[in-house]
Structures are given as C-alpha cells and as structure tokens.
Length: 136
Image (cartoon, rainbow, N blue to C red; front, side):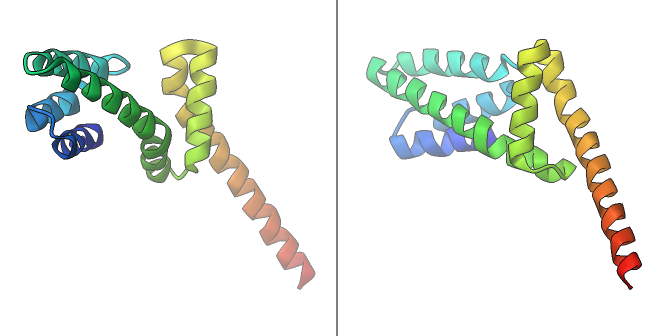
C-alpha cells in the first residue's frame, strides 16, 4: 500500500497520466513477493507509452528511485517497528539472508535475527538487573 500511494502521489506531482490507476495497480501487484512491483511497473510503463515515450522514461526513473527508497528506508522501519528490531538490523538481515539463501533466506533472516536480538536483549537486561541487585 505504501509503494502504491507514493507512486500515485509522485505521478500526480510529475504530471504523469493514469496516476491513480497505476498507483492502485502497483499497490496490488507489490503484494506478490519479489516480482510483483516489477509487473506493476511494466504494465504502468506500457499504459504511459500509449501517451508519451518521454513520460514513460520519467515514470521508469521515478519508480526505480521510489522502489530503492521504499526498500532501503521505509520497509526496514515498518518491519523493524512491528517486530521490535532496529531498521538497520532488518536491512542487514535481508541483505545477508538473500545473499546466503536467496528468497528463502530473506524470508527466514528477519524472524531469526529478531529472535536472536530478543534473546540477547533479555540476557543483557537480566545481567544488568543482577548487577544492580548485587550493588545494593
């Protein structure tokens, strides 16, 4: 939903045709893992090509930049906030998980790292509590 909304708003600001339609299309196709957003962008580009080649190029550049922003800034913050993991760790987990095991690695890395993070956090808290009680 975030990517679709940002796409529609950006397209309106840039004066590109079919902004609402393509925004909705990208929002729904982005639900398909890995290739969904690309499907939406491809269909959106074809729609805009019926109007203007230069606007289609502007659209492609805009969406590529927007997807990079969404994938590297917005997504880690949203996912990190919902699972209690700092956004930098989410980005690191996805990168390493993807490099080691592809799509399955990406899907497994975030919950695995979130679990390890929580275990370590609980252990540190327990040690601090013990140390504080011993100092009294």
